[in-house]
Amino acid sequence: MSAAVPNVSRLRIPASAPTLAIDLAAIAANTRRFAETTRGELMAVVKADGFGHGLADVARTALGNGATWLGVTSIEEGVAVRAAGVAAPVLSWLNPVDCDIETGYRHQLDLAVPSVSHLDAIIRSGCPVRVHLQLDTGMARDGAAPEEWFELVAAARRAEVAGRITVVGVMGHLAMADRPGHPANAAGRTALLCGAEMVTRAGLRPKVRHLAGTAATLTDPSTHLDLVRIGVGLVGIDPSGSTRLRSALRLTAPVVQLRRVPAGTGIGYGHTEVTERPTTLALLPLGYADGLPRTASGRAEALVAGRRRPVAGLISMDQTVLDLGDEPVDPGTDAVLFGPGDDGEPTVDDWAEWAGTIPHEIVTRIGSRVRRCVR
Ligand SMILES: *Cc1c(COP(=O)(O)O)cnc(C)c1O
Image (cartoon, rainbow, N blue to C red):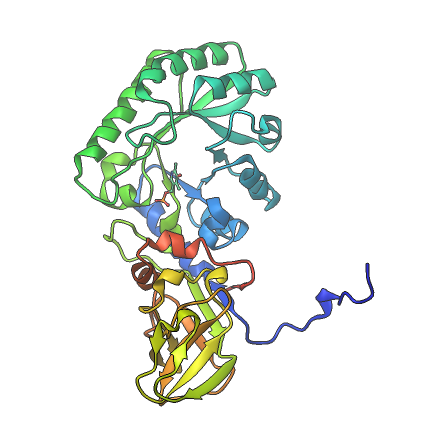
């Protein structure tokens, strides 16, 4: 290594830096709420780094507060769950046919099986994996098409009799769960129950039928079946808008620079905003590379010294400017980009609205430069 390369580990991280604080007590409370809501088992879905909250922390917190299963979307995420010392059953879906089945088996991962080709790959691997037969219950997305289901079930039965797999589950997913009462929900539920019935009639004995995510679990008990799969609800987001959950994230960044500018000053790239009067601008050292959606420019706000201040001009890759008006603050003051909302700070929901997206996208995109602080 060249002598000119600094030893990064010796850098002192300033007391104040862009920080994502993760409140595990909120995740624990949300988990308990879901465990109380259903008589079935509770699977904590910890994909996408626990919806941006930390896979291992969310997994352990959920299991300590009523969850009995974990759900992920790949063998890699499943291995990460096991590396966190988790012994509970783990289901992985969305695996390509050529995924590393042997590694999955060695880590005792259950695999979703959405097609005969996926089943054949498991049989070829020689690993007697536990599987969940996955039916498309109305999304034209993951899962077997209804017209392929009979063939898949028959092949699964032959494979189980031959000792090549064990069928432990049947699963589907709902497209319209955030719209309670939509006919697609009842249709999806009927599709899953009929699909599970075919599985039983073929002589298989799956222990769990599962369909519901957060929204269906909160709004329609008839979808709970034997197990519910809860992801975004654990971290405080309710897509159905029916229930108050506790948000677990707080994103802060220090003011690194203050500028007094006259009227007529263009701010940032493209001068999308020009000051109408003299004002004080505050610079924050984070931008869209850190997960602030650029499309929220012109609408977004942050809380600084107890007051909401508008973002001025376009959010850049690494920088965001706030307009403080005539109430400057000390350099180093922390701005709160979002939090649970207790002190008047914006929420994840606010950012989603400003950006024209859903809160899921805001929480799963906070960049790796933002340091994490788990409470
Ligand atoms: C992400 C996901 C879930 C969790 O859904 P939430 O709405 O986040 O609770 C459940 N099941 C499947 C198949 C998923 O992909």
